Image (cartoon, rainbow, N blue to C red; front, side, top):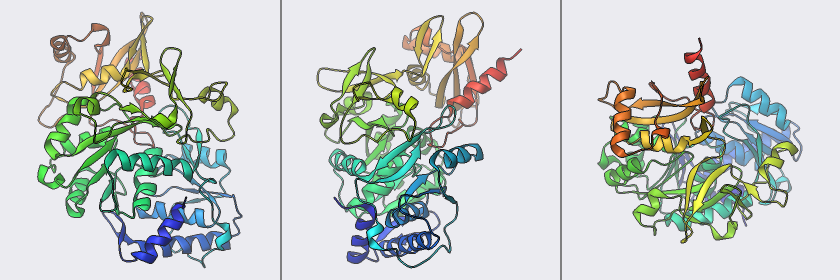
Length: 468
């Protein structure tokens, strides 16, 4: 099994002028990728960093972050990937938690002689430490080798019928699980170009998709919804797309169907986490109801089984190595006999299709009744005025918690009242226990480092709003 650095070297030799990365600011060929990662690796060795030392990188989601990761690999160092939106508290925490010896925030001019070849990491070596997305509290640190992501890549190639003729675009932050395979691993394994944005902007994404004739898009659910809502969206601009991999949050069926109808691309997803990799997937061979209403068939090699009230556990080649030096967190992540848990509640039907019911930790407990935030978000998201929605618990003296929905409105809709939303849910026949009892209309939803909605911020906000 080759490593990323070996693949980059191979492409640089066979296709030096071929495009490796493009962003809104620059283009980088395979020869550039090889040369720049060699030079940065040489600088790190010259600075005295020894094999196994940890080097943190907090860089925009452009080509440089991939140069930094490959440079660390070539120098025998472990990269610590920190999201570009992480605040100082999170950065300090991750630096301390990982023991990183330095923080790279700009790699321009950090050049040296190529490092000794024998220092390079192998596919089974730890090459990356990254973090959970930090939706609540300070993140934990997840340990990765490349072998798990190459196993993931093989599943992705099969699911999306990917080839080296594809042009990829990853809108997902590179240090996180979804971003690792869509921007760092799969394009290198295919020898295909990858388009990235230093910071997500829907209009810029549309323009780059059209300019580079992107065929494979990777975006969290919120991002593809923002593409649909953008004034820059034109079906002809996205006509080159074949497939879009999405996930990271619940995939809204109605809007996913709209994306397929307006672009002609198939919406696919892997269900899993930064820690587990994937437990199930949809593919181009699945029919539309299964693609959009389920998280796909369980992946056979992951040996998935359900525990307790429907929480899935797994063992298989896609697993991370768990949390770094954190026995307490690993005790929650793994069962006593070694099954890694997801923290979700799911159902698996007789044909092996998995459907996520909600997060085990993302329930609103109203009067002793568990209300799935994912279910609330799905139903509220069917209102024609709603572009984005996040459901959180609002504190309540009588019931303990009540359902609160934060929504971003679609263009052309100036307002939405709680009464109007309730009428809509009543017409749909939605159970009243899932109706929001608080509605907050906002311009945008706050994001954690991994691009997911930062629900901790929303819970703190509703507490402030309701404070006497």
